[in-house]
Amino acid sequence: MNPFAAPSLRDQTFFGNADRGFINSLKTCIIKARDGGVIWDNDAYSFLYGAECPETANPKLWRHAQVACKQSLFEVTSRIYQIRGLDISNMTVIEGDRGIIVVDPVTSGECAEAALGLYRHHRGNRKVTGLIYTHSHADHFGGCQGVLPGEELEGVPILAPEKFLDHAIAENIYAGNAMSRRAVYMYGDRLSKGPTGQLGAGIGATMSTGTVTLLPPTISISRTGQEETINGVRVVFQMTPSTEAPAEMSFHLPQLRALCIAEIATHNLHNISTLRGTAVRHAMSWSMYLDEGIVLFTDRSDVVFSQHLWPQRDLYAYLHDQTLPVVLREAWHAQGFYETVSHNVKAIYQRYMTWFDGNPAHFRKRCVSCMGGTDDMIRRAGSFAQEGDLRFAVTLLNHARELASCLEKLGYGCENGRWRNFYLSGASELRGRKFHTELYTESTAMTRALTLGHLMALLTVRINGPRAQTENFTIDICVTDLGQRCRLILSNGALIRRVGGLDQLPQLPAHSC
Image (cartoon, rainbow, N blue to C red):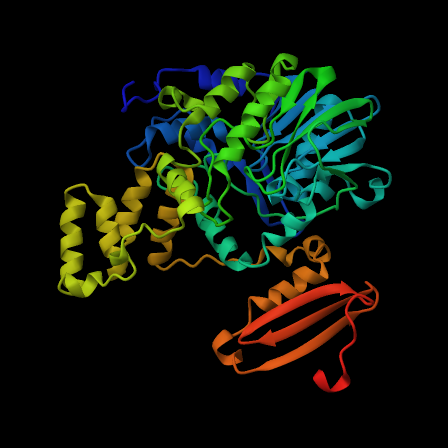
């Protein structure tokens, strides 16, 4: 096989697959919050259409963005519809006997409401009678109250994988601020849209910036083969934990011969370790769950759809290609628009071998002084940049803080949408622009979902270890309305927490507090 093989730019199959089932789109796709601020603007990507790829963009990424940024209502198969391009993720609607089941109501309430409005405009004002979260990432549950407001909530089942709520909240506890800042770089939503700016995020356009909401699940899915019937629709679940999310599941619709593969198989290479930061995902388990899906559902399915990008009719070939890399170099659906092979290989190495490469010389580096100081390093980096070795130039300039122009050039050449966004965001900040980020849990719905354990975890990572290492005390916090007690023990600079019922932790003597 040719190691330099690449998909043909003349191949138009990509576009035909993405357009299949098209019904209609919003004439103006600009969604605003109640205060009038724009939280989603898909019209900003109109520059992609009818134009040749400029020198400031990788041709493959430009072509992928033309497809990934399309917004419309699509028919997947009989009684299954998707709204794409109204957020980074898709919202799926399954028509039942007396209403509809909504799957993954995108990131924000405003976008979810607009997506449901587009569906209802063409399919009728059907009531939401069920809600499914495929996994614990906010772009798959954050818009829930946009499709299921409080007055319509009573009696509606909300299904999610086991431990969904814990993972949905906990991901943002320990490194929420840092992850939020990295996400701004990764998705590029603060960059201007255009040939020299943001083209998309590889798996969709970008994240909406509206109101993130959360309705707790009422039914927990805990095992593969578990079956639930919602409004006359049989749903058979497959558990896929520790793949793209720690709590994730796929599901099969036997009556409709359709499989929802959540986010473990999409039309590009997904990530084992994200640029925004999460625990390294388990590549072996991921592959095994895909293979299990083939065994369980191949002969019972005519269509597979995911919650990003578009469906695939040839289920077996799609999952086979995603699992085995033999033919991936020429396949458009497996290119590195969302993640690269090199980044994933490093992530797998990190999971098993940690970040250390076994070379003791790499414990410490003092590059600047060894190269004659900052001025000499900048001069040498300039030479490497002129020779076309931009990555090594950036490595040198990272020590000298003279990065912007090289980062920009690297961004323009990137096939991967997230890497492009990272490079261009870094260049933009180096030139003086500041990206304001706020902790994800600013959402009142997310805050209400925090447990006592989550709240105390916030304290443990904010202890000043060096200053606290000589302190030693214990405090009990009793929350009577929850019937819980949290014991905080400060010892050797570490804050230990124990959470239990009021009768599970014996009371402390008065003098110990």
